[in-house]
Length: 460
Ligand code: SAM
Image 1 (cartoon, rainbow, N blue to C red):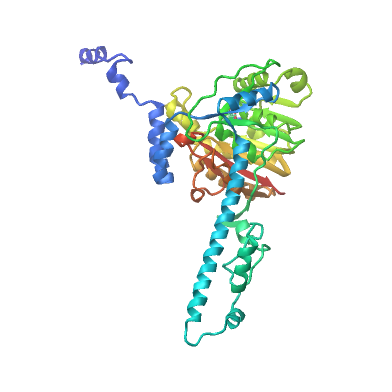
Image 2: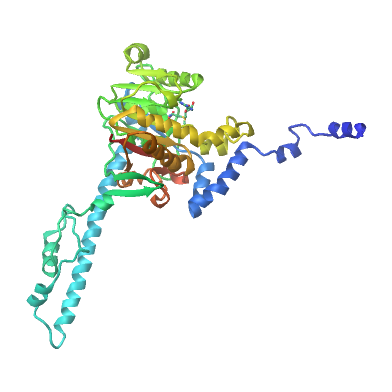
C-alpha cells in the first residue's frame, strides 16, 4: 500500500507541466467566472460589450501638470491628436442644447400642422362653428408646455398662439421630478437632480477621441524637473469633478494611495489644504513618490507649510473633521485588475475573507466620511467595480446607518442631467439600473472604468 502511494507521488507532474498548468484555475479565471455569473444578471444584454471592454485594452487620459511647462505640454498633446476633455464637455453641452431646441421646434411644428388639419376638417363640416368660437372653446392644454428659454422663433410662436394658450416656464420642472422621494425600509432618502458639472478652469485633461486607441507616451520632465503629465484611467476624473471642489476648500482623500485623485484635486489649483490618507504605510510611500514626481519643491512648498499632508490612519477612525470635501475611493474588487492580473488579485483563495468583508469595510469608511465632512460639504464615494453591492448597495446601507445612528442629514445628488455633457468621452450605465450613483462602464471605443461614483451632500 505504502509502495503504491510512493509510486503515485513519484509520478506527480511538475508545476509547469502542461497538464498541471491547463487544469489550474487562476484568480483571473475565478474573477471572470464570478462576474459572468453575477453581472450578466445585472447588465443583461450589455454585459457582453462591458466584458469585452474589461478584457480589452484600457484607455488613459493625460492630466497636465500645472507645476511643469503646462502651455507647452498642452500644445504638444494637441499636436499628437489628443483633445481637451473640458472642451469636449462644453461642445456636447452646447450641441445637446441646440438639439433640444430643434426637437422642441419640430414638436411645435407638428402640433401646428395637426391643428391646421383639424381646423380644415372642421371647416369642411356642414354645420361648422366659426374659428373664433372654436378658439373661445379652446382649453388650456397642459401637455403643451413650452420652455421659454429655448429660443423658439417668433413666427412659430405666433402660429401656435391661436390654437391654445401657452404655459410659461415657471413650473416646467415640477418639484416631484426635482426631488425624488424614496421610502425604503423605514428610512427616507432625498435625491436632488443636478444640472451642472463644474470643470475647473486650470484643470486640463487630455484624451483620444472615441474609437481612437492611441497611447500617450511616458511623460517627459519639464524645466522645473517634474513630469509634464500624469496618466490615469479616464473614469477617475469624474469622482473628482463630482466633488465640486471650490477655491479655498480643505479636502480629505480618505483612501488616497497611490495618489492619482489627490493629484487631480491639486491640479484644480483650488484646495487650500489637502490630506492624502491611506491605511497602508507602503502605499502612502507611493503617494510621496507621486507627489515628488509632480510637485516641485515638495518639502518647502507643500509638506512643510502643511498644504499637503500625507497621513497613515485607518479611514474608519480618522481623527480630524470639518472638511469641505471628502473623497472615499474605497478598496474594492478592482474588476479590471481582477480579470487581467494574477498578482495581488482579490480572487486568490487566500483573500476570500477580505473579499467577502469588502462591503462592510466600504460602508464603515463611507459612514466615517459623512461624519468628517462639515455641514454644507460634499462626500464622493467611489469604486472601480461594477458590483451593485459594493456601489449603490453600500451607499444604501450607509444611508440607513446614518439615519438610524446619527442626526446627520444627507441628500444624494442625481448627476444624470449634468453628466449628459460627458457623453462623447464616457459610456455610462443605463440610469434604470442605478439607484443612487453613476457608473462608467468599459466599452472598447471608450474603454475607461469601471468607475462608480456617488455624490452625497451633508445638509445637517
Ligand atoms: N484613490 C486612489 C487613487 O486614485 O490613486 C486609489 C485608492 S485604492 C482604490 C484604495 C486604497 O484604500 C488602497 O490604497 C488601500 O490601501 C486603502 N485602504 C484600504 N482600507 C483602508 C482603510 N481602512 N482606511 C484607509 N485606507 C484604506
